[in-house]
Length: 358
Picture: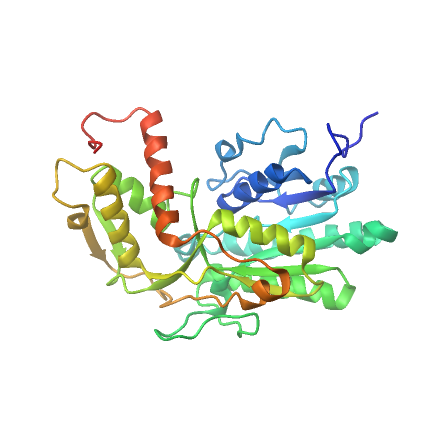
């Protein structure tokens, strides 16, 4: 009888359980791993509002890909997957991740990001202890986190690194910080071979519409007002999701057990600069008949509570030790993202007169 590792050709060199693989970053990771041809992917996702199987259409027919709808807190389900699929690595992305939602309703962030991670760690520990020889030595639990656990930075040339102290400032970032600490504790106390990564803000195709860049693009395409918190001075370090997916595979395969890696692109831009750039790029590609410039649609709105001033990552460690570097610069990456949204809109039914193409 065929096993989980049987595929056409030489076969994958490992099988990875990706949690939250229907999310924005998770789906990009699944696509990247399947495209690479060396990995079998088991995607476990609960399919909340943030999950999209559409983002996985490219890989759903691959013999090296399997989707399982389920909860990371379902210990028996996770244990069965780890055992039956002979999992070599867990790449843990399943999380509640929207800061505004965490302010309005923090309970689900505690349940998923902290309690869910605990149950996943326990199942992974049991699985790792059952392994022997090479399988035991190569197993990894890769926890994917955020730079928001470090709090924020002043408007200067400082950057977050792996040595930065934890100073979370929102319920979301506090829950992710707690999960980071759990993962490290399971390594130091029980010996579970873990790696951690903390990334800067991601952008690219298939991102949830609540986030700044897709929200701005979709509203600007329709000629709607463009809300910007405060005065728009808050700065983020923007990392294309495809660059991040490459980094995640590199860390999973080559990261040292117990180590953490900060992943960023050295692409700092204020929120207002990002929104203005989107306006200008869309005006070039699909000018509106109702306004001279989409910049006229920008409206400053009341800032959210505890809005962090600035995030910036120093990725020197992953560059130096693992040889990864970001390849997609922000300006062309943003333009390509806008082009993707325009193609998606063109393939859907649009209200007449929404915008005119150049």
